[in-house]
Image (cartoon, rainbow, N blue to C red; front, side, top):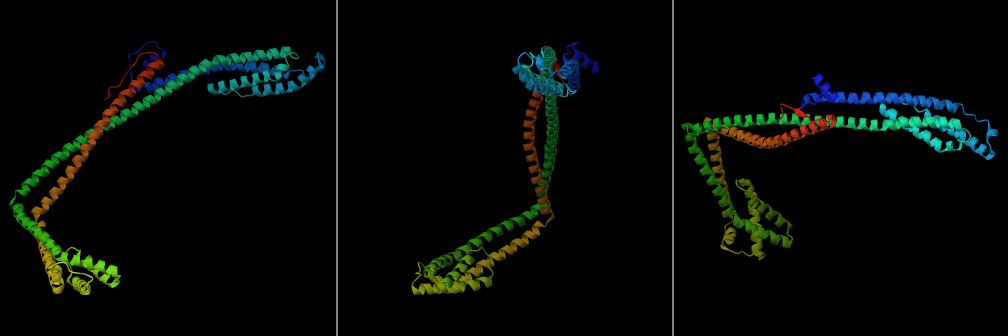
Length: 426
């Protein structure tokens, strides 16, 4: 593999295929080559810059600042005396900047040195050429040497940056591909697991359905069905008892509500309280405790009778008239309807306790509960399976797209047409 990568990097042959697992090593090798080449080139430039800086520092240290008589014009001498210290300080400050070992740091620092020196020349240095022609010529030559090296490095730094960015992008694309591949593999595992769950639960459901059918065709279960039918009939009787109770209470309930409105108009708080309590009582479902309606209904009937007698509440029909003429009849009807409801309910409870405790019914109940759980599990697994298959299709497309992106980046960086081999690609 390493010889393959070595030949690939050197360009001695153009391989038609590259294993996906070989790419990280190729990236590492290419990054190392870029960094080594750049370090070698910067090393040469560093030697040139240091030599130029040394010569410039020697010139700066030898400036003669005590010869104003050599200046043909006294005014120029004053300008020189003011400009020279500032120029020397600016040049020495710029040249004293450290040159880091790493290529990027070196290139940045060299550019700052060059920028500072050029600024000094264009500033105070422009007044010194006539006073120190030779010194300024040497300084300018050193500055040109440094500028030439920095300018020569610029395209090489740019190319190195571009290639390192390209290699980093390739590494990122490879990471995206591997992540998509991992997710796709995980999705396939989930699909197989869900398919197995649907299959296994389906077999279990068939078994349970068969067991229920066998049980419900057995003598014990069929014998229980007669009792269950009787319970169902009793439940119908109980519903009818409830209906009759409500029908019996309807007339009195209507009359109590009309009486409550009359009490409200007359602002009779006690009558309102008694009638409101009776209304809530009559609106309940049976059974009704006898002590409760014996306590609540007679006072309400008396309030209604007083309203009728005073003319505040005229009676509209025979049912209402009968309710007042024979007040005990309401109590008797309510008592009988409630007792009938309670008797039927007790009979149902007893029959249910007996039949539901029968082994055949208990087993049927357990089997049907298990069937419902299996059906729910199958439904959930099928829903998840449908989603997982759609997701797997999307991930499959993402894997192919990611691999193609990796191939394109390798081709762009190597300058060769390349096929990426991935045997496990879905």
